[in-house]
Image (cartoon, rainbow, N blue to C red; front, top):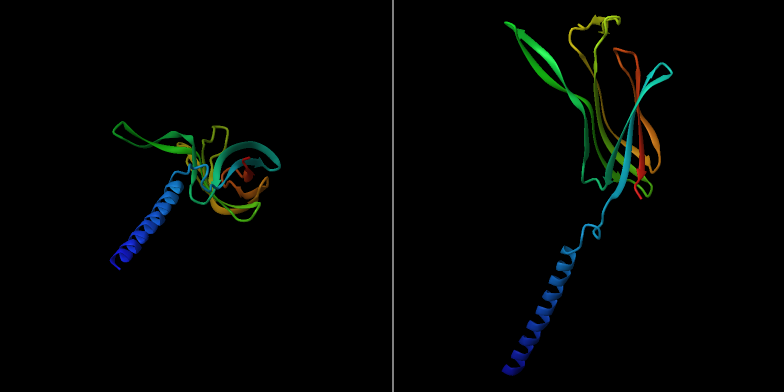
Amino acid sequence: MKKAALAGLFVCMVFGASLLFGQDKEKNAEASKTPETQKAGTPLRVQVVFNEYDGDKKISSLPYTLLVNADGRYRTSMRMGLRVPIEISSNAGVKQTQYLDVGTNLDGTAQKADTDKFILNLQVEKSSVYVPGSAQKSASIGGNEISNSQPIIQQFRIQGDLLVRDGQTVQSTAATDPVTGHVLKLDVTVNVVK
């Protein structure tokens, strides 16, 4: 009887060990998978174009391209610009200068919404320096004249979600600059990287 019990215990131990060993093997196989074999998002090429118009005449076009992975986990960021010195005070002949970042900032994430559609979360910030020349009139907003002894920083910001298909271009925004009267249109194109 003792021999039968010992034999049964031995079979249980061997069988249990083989089950555990098999599970460890599966875990090790999962852990050893390379990033290429794990499920990845869809890579997207996102082009953002700032088109500036004076009436019907296009006066500038600034394109930027980001690669965004449509998995919703990772944010892609781009910063392009320069630092502008701004004199903030002059006490007893000593000038103090502060540097201000001016340029374009783009941040984006994407998620797959359907078989051919994506939800693109885009944050866009564009700033530029406006310095009126001697022949130009001073800038004014709402009838209040702005001193032209210092540069004026123009800013444009937008954040939102766009539902776009592969290959589609959407005009996400059109805004009028209160100083110049120029219209800035933001076009966004999304293409799946193949």
